[in-house]
Length: 593
Image (tube, rainbow, N blue to C red):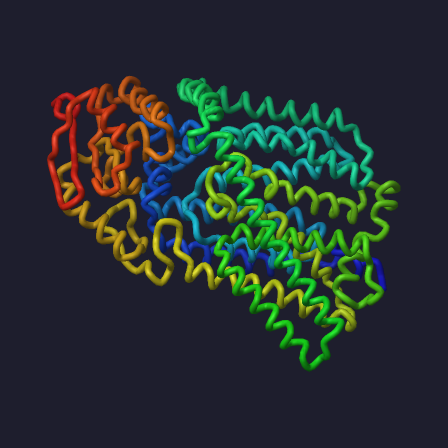
């Protein structure tokens, strides 16, 4: 058995499969684009489309978005440049971003693992894009920046030419990413995570210089964004946001408080661990089946195990649990097999263990070897699923669809190894069964699982008669509600008016209106809600102008009644339309119309 047969890396001279990857990339882009035509949520996507269209023009009226300052500043500029006014345009931008990220990952990983393993891992990520929002947002941009930072840091870790430059550039990327999603502050743990890896593999490098270079880059990245904000006049929004975050983080009643963030993080991590243990159990079942089951019954055993995977992935419903769980399971079996190698050299677990044999001693001799670089890259690839969830008060289904886009190809390579000897034929089939069952499970869930606040793909067959939602499909109830508002309410509200709606944030753009102060009362405490509304009233570019209120009285909460109370203290409101439980209110003063 040769060394190359045992390792999950391969000889770079054996070909990089550029044509195969190009064909895969085209298919993946078509798939992502095709699935973007369904689903119109009444929640966060309304913030995205209205925020991107109006944030740059009037940042103080929606300075709540300052928590994601650079996301809205950048996307607003792109939307204005390209004339994007539809949700579909934002979804196409996301497809472009994910395609670009896959190209970057391929160009870097092809030096370490086979193209077919890269394609398999990225394909799992593409199939995991369901159940959340399809519009480009701060989660997508943050993952893009984090992956680029990890690859730069890895290059600096092993480069013989200007390693500190690559690490400093990694820091610049991280510094900029803070302003995409301010909770990306957790990304500063990257050099310390790398220190742990260095202790594991006995890397001897100047860590003080690495840390100094990294944080110098972080400072430079932050200064770049702050300088840009000062130049275009939006620095005041950042100053207000920083002051707010100090208050929000210590307020246990705020949905973005540290208490809420820690609770959500623990819930997500437990879900991912549960799924990883199940997948590890199934993988071990494949190993036992290969050893104990005869050739005639082997495929039956594989089919039963694969069916278990499909059912559990479907029942769990959260794609992030599946992707993180698969990676964790692969690496857990890899670590386990290093400590307890099997005597069956042809078994999958023995092949899992063989990649680790002798790496530690070899690392001391040649820290820049290809095999050693691959091992540190595998370890660094798990930084996103460990640290990216910190700071989010949503579930991993909301932010975690692409968390493992870097780790998945490496996990596939770890369990597959690409061995081609006849004695490895069964193990190769087992790997194919495992990956195929996960892909099938994700696809079945994609079709049957309801999308965030919308129906599933079978339910989404109806359209909304609005420019913002053109060409997109939603379920019947959602379409009927929004179309009724388009017919009855849109003729009453002048185009370009400010609007707050308590039952659909997307309604703002459907009725061709602009956001005001808050998007919904559930994102903030009463004190912060008042701060956002009064800032919009006092500093908005259009002067002291108040919004229309479109209300579903059956869904009116204490928080939204507080919103009405604040606005009524600035101007009295009059009812201009009513239909069943829905009512439209407008400020009485002519100067505010």
